Length: 428
Ligand code: TYD
Ligand code: MG
Image (cartoon, rainbow, N blue to C red; front, side, top):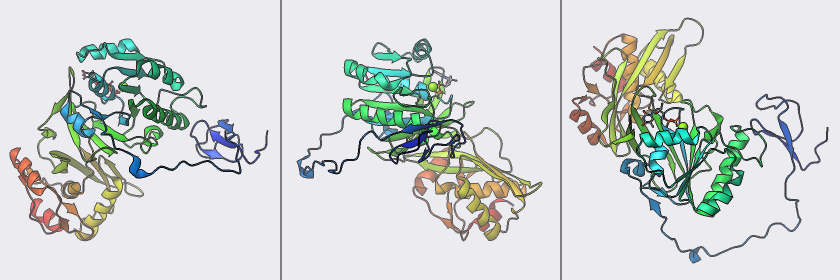
């Protein structure tokens, strides 16, 4: 085995971990025989790189050019249309509708190149036909190697390039198989450089599990200009498209979409779309979220059961687990709920996430309701942030939330001093 000469590093082709020495097993991911030697391409020179300086005032700002699709709600999530030369990441769970969304979106952005590492062109044509899209200006390839992209970008000069998905494409100039962290990161970098060089908008599709555990796309988030996530449950129709990062606009916008026979449809008046049809039951609380400009009623469900052995379990889907642990602490200490020996399971119905502080009170009430096995008042809705002393804090857009709840036949209950009072008055 060659000894490191002080210049080269050993990079794991599975997880991308760098180490100064070679080893049979990667110390980070445990993969065997995955370390490859890399020598830095540029020799160190004593002169240092030449840096060119310009005056900031010499730059004229040309207005960034945005293209609108047929879908005004989706455009709003992207900050008012797709900016040329921007790199966008569309994330979501497998089967949630990412490919469908992107295909609908690019119809008008001709010419477009669709690089499919997942489905055959025939399958994509089938989908396009179902969506009744015009396809003359969409060029497709099922080659998954992106190292030759530059040539076709030069030839076709597309307005938009779609990469579906980042886990299935690779760059043959880089070691590691498709989907490895190294490939995801490096392919992302290559795509970013191509976007800037050819002024083409690039949409990268990436699979992410609910817990965000797939190592891939998350590492791309800081590299791209816009990150949107498509949320929802596969067996239900409602979807939320949410911006989590946008260099060209705000990040608190959502679009509510419904998956239909003929693709995703926009819902401009979403209101109650994420509520379950079941009757008011112990452990269920309705919360009014305000996502961007759209108020949204969602149901929060909690289940508490005595811990059978060891440490109590707390699991959460659609709500931050750390936040849940804090709220449980508040409920124990400030509301006198005996949750110390209880497993707690929390779920936001509809597969969406409720990461707004306004969801706190509904989370607390759902837990208390399950614990006491009592239901909250019929058709009641809640929104308030819960502080560490158990106090309830106002949240932005109270009037808008109240109005939407009333429109949908719900009574917004807001007049409580603290979480203990809210529990005592609603769970009787
Ligand atoms: P897809 O876009 O393939 O999901 P992803 O790219 O995120 O994996 O679509 C997923 C599901 O959507 C698929 O099971 C079929 C359904 N679907 C519809 O209900 N209506 C439609 O018009 C289309 C195209 C798909
Ligand atoms: Mg797909």
